[in-house]
Image (tube, rainbow, N blue to C red; front, side):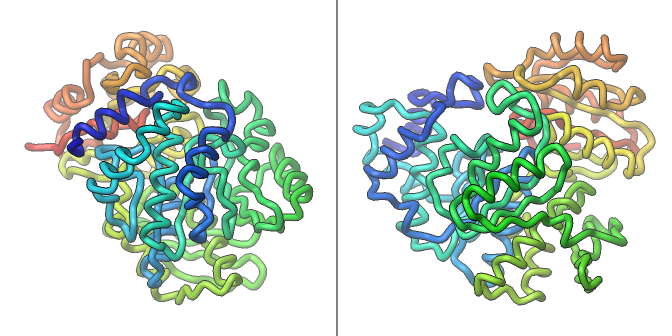
Length: 432
C-alpha cells in the first residue's frame, strides 16, 4: 500500500471518535492489551510521562516534550487529535513519524485488525508505542485521548502522572459531575508513581487524594507550590515570572504560546520539571527557558491562540468546551481590536448552549461546521446562537466563513476561529 492508501484504510476500516463520537470508544483496555501483547509490549521498553486533563493537556504535553528535547533527551510525543496530518500524533524530537513506518506497521498488524476489530485510537496508541520502542527514545510524553481510567494509553507505568485540571466535557462518557470526571482522569494514577494535579479545586481534590492514597502514590498540587506573577504580552510572547510559593524564589520565562490561559499550564509544567529533576533528569534552567520560548518550533504545536495573519489579526484556537471557552473569552477581553468577528463550529456532543451563553454578544458571528459526521450543522448552530442573542450568518465550511469575515473586517479588527479542533484543522492559509 502507498501512504495515502494506508491512511484511507485506517480511517475507513477502524471506528474513529472524531467521526462517530462515543460509538467509536471501547469501554475497556482489552483490545489495547491485545495489541501491545501482539507487539511484544513495546510500552514497557521506554520511560514515559502520562498527561490527562479536561483542558491544557495538549499544551502541557508539548511544553514538557520541548523541555526534554532541548535538554538532550531523545523524546517521543503522542497527542491527539491531529489538525492537518495524521502523523502529527506521533513525533520524535518534534519530527512526525515517517510515512514508511506507518505503512509497514499497518501491513504488519492487518491480521490482528481483522481478528479483533480495534478502534482507530487503540491502533494508533499501539503504533506510537512500537515506534518509540523501535527508536529507543529516552522518554515519551503520552497524552490521554479522553478520560484516563479506560483510555487506551493507560497501559503504561510512567515516571509521573500529570492531570492538568477538571472541567465539564465528554459528560456522556466520563460522568456528569466534577467528582465523577475527576475519578476517571485519576485512573492514570499508578502504584507509587508521583501524581501532579495542575489545578486544585474543592469539588475534586478529595477524589485525587483518596485515589492517590489507595495506590500509595505521592501527590502534589502544582498551584499550591507555584504561581505566575507579573505577566505581560511582548512581541508575540507571554512573559511571566513563576514564583515558588514556599521561598518566593522566581524564574522568568518567555513563552511562544501567547494565550493568557497558558499561565496555568506553565504552573503545571513547572511542578513537572521539579519532579523530573528529583528523579535525576538533567534539566538546566537556561535550556528549560529556551525550550519554552520555542515550543511551537520544537514540537509543532498549533491552534492555541495562534495568530496566522495580521491586519486584520486572524487567530485560531481549539477551545471547544465550557471551561476552555471561559479562558478564551478572558483572552478576548485582554486583546485590542476595533470589531470582533467570531467564526465558530462545534460538534454535536458538546454543551452547546452553555458555550454559546459565554460568548460576547457584540461580536459578528459566522456559524460553520467541520466536514465530519459529528459536526453540528451550521444552520442548527445558527438557530441556537440566535436564541442566545448572537447575531450572524451560517456558512457551509470554515474557509467560506473566513473569506466572508476577511471581506468585512477592517485592518484593526480581530477574527477568531474556534469551537472545534476539527474546524480549526480545516483552515487554509489566508491570502489577501
